[in-house]
Length: 211
Length: 211
Image 1 (cartoon, helix red, strand yellow):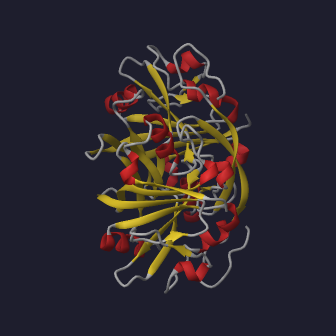
Image 2: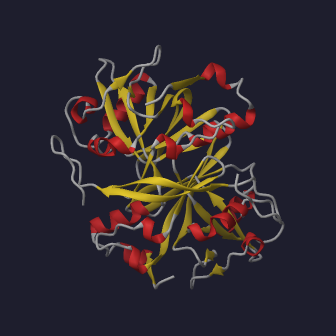
């Protein structure tokens, strides 16, 4: 390994603002990337990219998401609270630039503005991204304001999963490489994944092997 | 796009348990992967992989992490609560199998058991993974038990960042590809990232360009 550099908390305040923002946003590593689709009471659709979505549990199937209410996707939060529903849509490498662009401050629908079509599933009250290879319909369960920095954590229960059929293995594993799912880092970097392997369940004193 | 398959909430209960667990764990897409290093009051070190770590804010620099108290890394939670400190360590592709293996139920230290060396930074009371290309020292700030499924969200403030020097760009962006950072999916799949590009700040009615 080459030389290391150490940043300590006492120095953080002296870092140039944009440098600091980039650095801190990169710390967690590769992030999940999802386009969140919502609709207001007048059926005006909204779309925004989110990189702080995480698995919370399989039974019940729950997912968490962090929203900064002061940032661009404020309509997302309003719409989710108004209707109680939202969608998560994996971003394919074919449209990662459109996904990025959906974060711009548009007046009307970002679907139209960036050129992504909606898809509505019967009985589900939020719009999906038609070209997304993995679409998840969620119902808002809980809202946790985090006083420490005024962000909000939403917890949603999975209602519906629409997935490209040939990407679900017999054991339920989803092949993200085959789906073409994109991962992101920091504020503006996008990546595809290249599989190293799947490993057997970890047991003490026994090396894992490739599945 | 090929044919799609739809799973609805009414069917979830009928899915085979392992299939369901795999499927639900894959939904969020690529996940960040970090080894969490801790120590108890007797200086017994502990190491466990976590895939639910996320950026919470840059100023103050905060990171969130989800822990399932009933699962293997229970010592992690005990140690963080006892000492107030923990480390996050990016996993390099050279040791992703050791990182996976650190989730096994060992009696003693997982550092020794899986063959990863500790590194102590002066004045910081939790162990780092020596070979990790990006090490983050955190102080526990808040603990949020999530009643909905008995998971716990910890919020930590960044105290220290130790990073391979040639992987931080002039604007603060961290080059995860160069670091060799691994991302994961589901319960057992590991990947490296391949960059598509960095994009300029999204402005309405203006296509982003590559940085």
